[in-house]
Amino acid sequence: MATKLNRKALEHARSLLKNGKVERDVRDDWSEHAPSAGDENSFIDKHGFDEFSKWHLGIDREKSEGTKSSVSFPFGDLKKVHRCAIISLESRAAQYDHDDIRKAAKDLLEEIDAD
Picture (cartoon, rainbow, N blue to C red):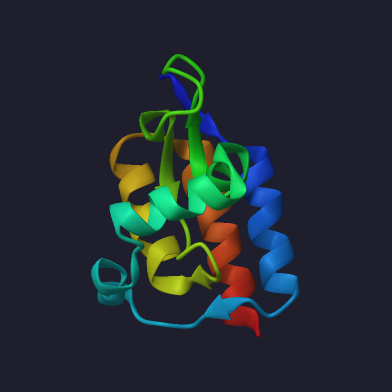
């Protein structure tokens, strides 16, 4: 498996949670709350790809660096962590046997729900 846990993204997510940058939405909201491709491109243009990659718990070093295909498992809308995104990515990570990403998502979800 080429996709691994993006530790910088996990640190970023934890920092956002610590600073209250979290949307406590429900499971099925992610399809409505996820950033559009245009939003992603604007974010990359303004902040660079390294900052964009911090919004994804999955990273694939075998894909071309600096491309959207090299990151996966988004956890927020490029402003806040979304509970619905964490739920979605935990399920998807488990489905595809990305245990390190699934565990990180589970831990983040527990942090969100503890508050």
